[in-house]
Amino acid sequence: MIDPGGRSHPLSGGADEAPAGVPGDGPRRPPPFARGRSRWVGLLAAVALTAIAVVLVLRAMRMLRPTSEEIRGAVYAAIQRESAETFLVTGFVDLTATTTVRNTKRLLPGIIGLNLGTTSATVRMPGRVSYGVDLAGFRLEHIRIGPDTSVTVTVSPPAVWAIEPVLEDMEVETDVGWARLYSRSGRQVEQEAIRLMETALRAQGEAHLRDSDQPRRNTARAVQGILGPTLAAAGVHAPRIVVLFSDRPSIPTEVIE
Image (cartoon, rainbow, N blue to C red; front, side, top):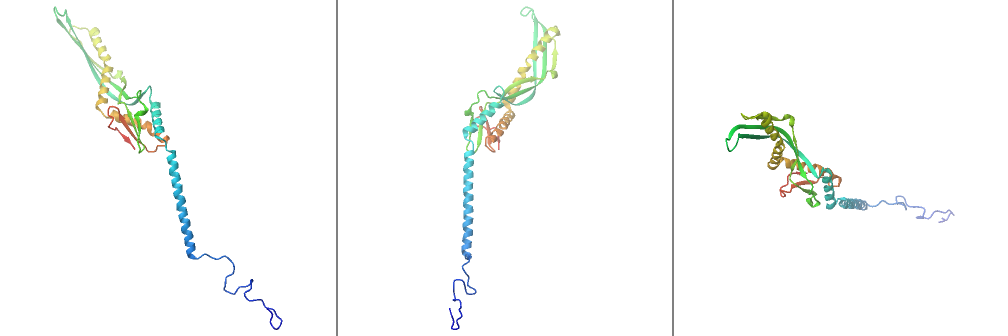
């Protein structure tokens, strides 16, 4: 613009000039409500991503969890590996047995029938009876996997495995008949009483297994001790292990959580 004096002035409101206090073409700050909405969108996105990650992890865990057949196979292999000659020794009991043998002799029986006396020998001997379970008939069908990661194993009832008499602690009492000789009848009844000792210890051991629940508890603990590490290695954590015996199939002996 040119004034009457010939001086030129820049046009008001030109492209290179803005009135004081009026913003130019620089970046503008979003209004407060827009900033709040952005924060909510970000938060919702983070929550959604976290939920997706959790779902993926759970799916991966389900995929990595061993199947029932894999668990049964691991249990079967562990029991077979621990047994010696298909028998798993799970405990022992210390007992003392007593045997008595008597021998009576008569002179000319049926004619004179004179009683020459009775020779007797009583033997007391301590011994150890080892017991366990026979695994010769153990099969995969004796293993049951429950929906709550419980593992139920059915084994045969405890049975005697070995008899170990303690000969050095043996006590012998011998009474020789009035007309008998110790060197003959005395030694004879002593040897017979000693020979019967293993049978007597076995009978006492079998009675203990039949009348006491402790051998079953010891057997259950032994089986659980074998299976616990095996199941953990197979991916079954904190399993419930139930041991049943074939003669009491409805009575669980013990459960370890």
